[in-house]
Length: 196
Image 1 (cartoon, rainbow, N blue to C red):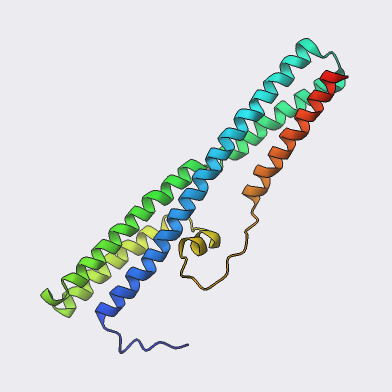
Image 2 (image 1 turned 90 degrees about the vertical axis):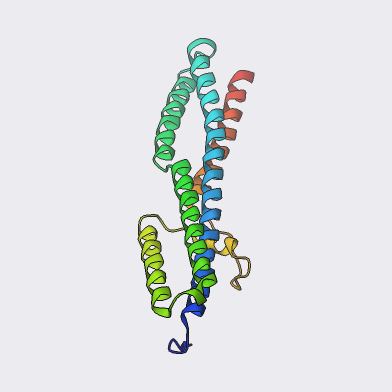
C-alpha cells in the first residue's frame, strides 16, 4: 500500500501524528499499569515467602530436629534471598514510573500539536512546519531514552486495533506463578513434618 505524501498537507500530517502518538501513549499507560501490578504481586508474594522462611528457620532450630528438614529450610531461605535479588534488579516500580512519566510527556506533545492545528490559520505554512519539526524532534529524542512497551500493552491500549489479542506468556508471569506453586508445595511439606 503506497501513500501519496505529495497530496498531504501539514494539517493532515499533524492530525495523523496526534493519532499515532496517542496510540503510543495508551500503550505506555498499559505498560505502567502492568509493571505496577507485577511489583504489587511480588511484594505480596515476598511477604508470604519470607514469613514461611522465618517459620522454617525457627522450626528447624526449635521444633523439628530432623536433618532433612533443616536442609530444606536452609535451601529455601537461600532460594528466597536469590529470588529477591533477581526481582529487585527487574525494577518493576521504577520502570512503571518511567512509563507513567513518558506518557505524560506524550500527552504534552499531543497538546502542542493540537495547539498547532488550532493556530493553523494564524501562521504561515513555513512557521507551522518549523514548529511541527521542533515538536517531533523533541518527541523522537524522548522515545530514544525509554524502553519499548510490549505488543500486549499496545494491543490492549488501542481497542480500535483490528489485530486479535492473544494471551502473552512471558517470563515474568511464569516466575511469579511458579513461586506461588513453590509456596504451596513448601507449606504442604511443612504441614507434613508437623503431623508426622
